[in-house]
Image (cartoon, rainbow over the protein chains, first blue to last red):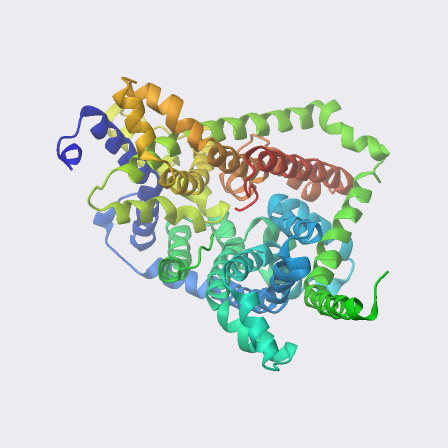
Length: 271
Length: 283
């Protein structure tokens, strides 16, 4: 306790450095929010606050926002439907300690380990000739699912490995529960915390995904981050800022929810 | 020889393993159809250009690509080193001291984790662009505005911006597992603060630093959004690939370069994991 009251020079140097790093990360965010709400950022706040730029973005880019939400939810549905059973397989196959399970886990991480540009180019070269698929939101959804799948599988797998699921399931089996009943009556209810953590991660990543989406999008399938890049490149700073503000408003609730899930669940889930 | 008594559980076990295959089938089909096979195709396309498989060597023989590769690797290595240094100082400090508003500081430090590369690029523009903060400040102080968002320094700042939050989280988690008694012992034996850091704290943090450093390096090498937004004329490898693909429609070269890029990031992550014995690929 005494040490915390009498701080040396080193403490204050470290504190100052920490605050500097925080400022480096947060000051541009604040500036961008202000710019999005200022009439003329070059003149400064004295030019007055306005929602004009936000309205302009809403008029011009509204569709990108809806598209991103639709893709994120579809991505969540697909990753949950294929990812949770896969996590179950990885947790159970040969007692959960097989080489094969580790290889599969490793493979699943590849679209995250390899730059999105490579994944996107591969998809274009392999499926680009199917015009209607190439031009649809489905094409982008495929990219997002590849990229986010491990973030659903990993937290679910972690919960499955840490809980006494095998014992519970055996108990249910000895009482005559079918495989189907066991999966939906025992496994799923016990891994909800993992699914929830994974779901938040998947939705957040999907809404913010740019590297893959930029290559896969067409003018008719522009998503929010693609629209952001477009506005940064061609429109005035205030509009880009207002657009960024909308993006921040979308991800902040997700981040708060993620923190809340991490705090409330006992399960050690790595986000 | 297995008798009839012992063979039954084996059979039942096999049946239950079979249903596990069914569980994995949808995800694995999706993965094979949309990632594995397209990647193999990409490898093929990379070798389909006028120079054939030699295209893969072009990254070393063509001095434009080689320069692009070297500058990408140097930039990423510098970003990784600086990020690790910053994160150790800030992470260990935050883990050790109870300071008021710590939760808020932590929130500030981790918030940018969810930003896509394009937004990170825009943050650099807010900071060091033509209408940026640094420009305005230097204009007031020295009568000349300093604009470096679109230079190598801007790119460097952007990469730092998205790397710091990731690494700090890992450092804090690792610092929580350190035994304060060891440092106390070193101090009581007369070790200076620097010696304690170098001989006690850093060795204990090494596995975490290797794995998070590898993630940081791999992310930087593959980062596209930030470089794209800043639209610098510095050709980092992802920008070169993008330009080959869109501006020159040189599909085979773009494919070959992205395979090389993918191999580099994958190799770095795999090596780090085998060194640190940790889950290196957890982003």
